[in-house]
Length: 552
Image (cartoon, rainbow, N blue to C red; front, side, top):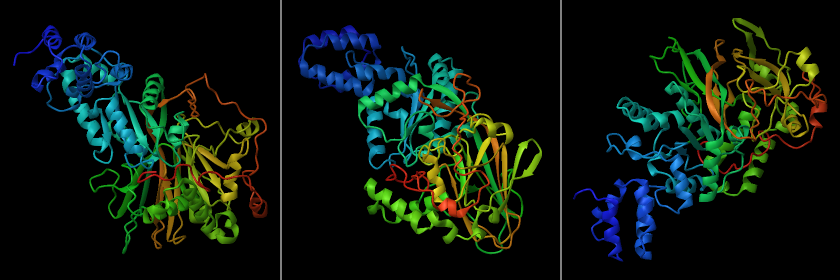
């Protein structure tokens, strides 16, 4: 059939009130320009025919129909099929989108919200630019996308060039899902990495909250999604530090020391895993594990509570369908493990100082020992000012501490990680007080944990919301965990962003003169600690929205 023009369609439509039986004829609409489609839609008189053509155009060309304000605006985010599908027919576009997006959604996050959000995005955008992470891994999707994009660029396709310049990524899920995408983008090593916006669908939602996207699960209607896309379009880019974590131990004579995840909890790509034999980090006779994080690494009390909660939820999912029940279960776990009265239930021999020697590096090549108070049972290496649901364990040091202890405000791109300690669950409650904070231990660009031989059979660790149980060989004094700076990645930040950039003079931190030092850094009076009853940091009580599946 010869290619039809806009006038051909108008002549046909003016003489009929029924849908054409030959759908090949109707499919020719896809080849018309947007101006022709708008002209065509405005002159269709028969209501039923107008509705049928409108629906067909909406399915095949989102945003093509005049008068459809919702889909019309979607053209600014739309990526055509020939860019997304390998070896598809080239379709010269007449419109360059202002903010082309690729959307990744964890359909199992947030109860049923992830699945509902997936449907809405696929309705508003090209369904081929919206991916369910349960069906397609983001590393494969983005690798193929950039391979095809490069081919189009080499052929002189101006749209491909502009899409690469303007591309933004949206990821909907928990902190583990967001970390997965951040790791994938880092591994691509692109000349220009696309910035990432996060939709909060998880438990703590620390990454979305830190960059102004909130921590409550979003509404799943078209208006809310359109409003979110508009925010993505207007958001500013902000660089944040990436951190690499490496653990190495002598290969055990018997048994395994591989990380043990909660039952069936899938780890993100950059959660702890053993390196391959051909990896440059591999060392003969040793087991080497690596990972990456952008928000925090923690070890001890908070990771143990998180691990128990994830395990319980996977074993008995029927008990985790009501938010109040979920919250009471989390609080029950904290109480059962004895963290509110840790000095009675957990001997000092199991604290961080007894478990490992800690060393930090503030200047290249200069390691120094970090003195850890013997009462510290949880240690957090923090990159963002949002931990376990939006609380800030580091706070903002007052002028006195900044001067005498060489401390600074926590910037997300200064190449420094904040090291904070907690004694027990009551200590975590201090974060709810004005200017409250944990025990500030140090700021460094590198930190190293050297585990004492036979100190414990295992410990608990957590990366960006992903907990695991880490076995420790009892006859090995070479177990080392080392965290180091590993470049930067771009995030998208809203005006309500809590994260601060050292490069942005418009939003400096203001030191607080009345720093609420309820837990003076080296104080170890356990009786005083137990009387603290102010509320609860999310890590030690119950996080919001804990009824999610898979990634936290």
